[in-house]
Length: 192
Ligand code: 5GP
Image 1 (cartoon, rainbow, N blue to C red):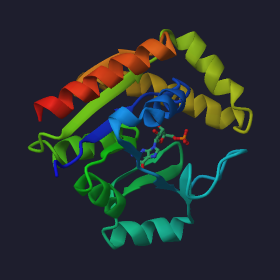
Image 2 (image 1 turned 45 degrees about the vertical axis):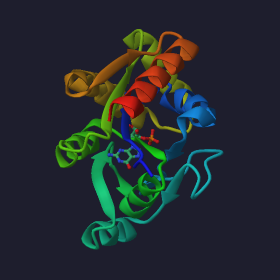
Image 3 (image 1 turned 60 degrees about the vertical axis):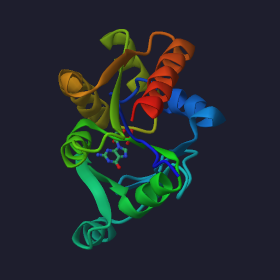
C-alpha cells in the first residue's frame, strides 16, 4: 500500500484553519486523518479532550518530550503544543494522508526532519486582511485582553514565515480555499 502524505497546515490564529480543515476532512476522496495535538492550554468552551486536543498538565507534556513521544513541539502564547508521533506514523502506514494543524516553529521542525520525504507537503493559510483577522481573534471571548494582544502580535510574526511553505492560500472565500487545497493534495498524491 502507498504510504500517506504528511501535510503541514499552518496559518495565524483566527484565519479559519478549523473551518477549512473540517471541510477537507469530510471529503472522503482525500482520505485525510487529523492529528490531534497535545497541549497545556485550557480547553475552550465546547472543546473535547481527545477530539480537539489532548489537554495535559505541563508535567505530562514535559514527560512526553523526554520520552520522545512527540514529532515536534513548540511554545505558543505561554502554552506548549506538540504532535504525538505514534498516530502520525501508524496512519501514514495505513495509507491515510495525515494533517498537522500546527504553528510555524513546529512546522519548521517538521520541514527539516522530513525534507527528504517526498510525501511531506506544507500549506499556509493567510487572511485577506489584518483588521478582519484581529476582529476574529477578539470574537473568541474566552480569551483575556492580554492573550488576544499576544495572539495578534503572533499572527503578524507568523505571516512573515510564509516563504518557508510549499503553498500559500488566501482564505478570502472558504469554499475556494478548500477546493484549491484539495487540488494541491490530489496533485501531490499523484506526484509522490
Ligand atoms: P489554539 O490555542 O488557537 O488552538 O492553537 C494555537 C496555535 O497552536 C495554532 O496556530 C495551532 O495551529 C497551533 N498548534 C496546535 N497544535 C499544535 C501542535 O501540535 N504543534 C504545534 N507546533 N502547534 C500546534
